[in-house]
Amino acid sequence: MTVQRIDLKTVEPAAYKAMFEQEKYLAASRLSKTLLELIKIRASQINGCAFCIDMHTNSI
Image (cartoon, rainbow, N blue to C red; front, side):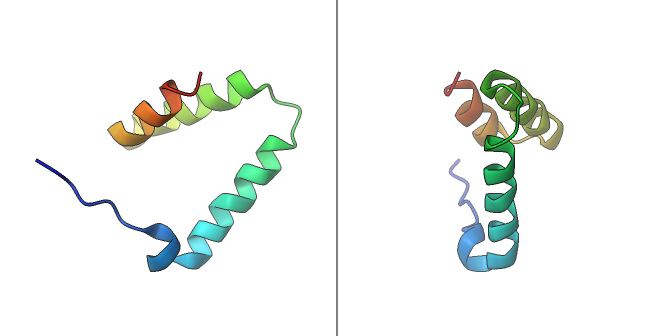
């Protein structure tokens, strides 16, 4: 079964911009890249997003 993903940038540009700004802020923080990815993995687990879990576990 194929699930069509929502194009957040088109559907809700303000939310997309806020997420992008948060990513920029976190990238400039003193947190290690590994810790940031672990946080993203855990958030994806809590949200039940298999796509995001796969995306974040392939980047480590």
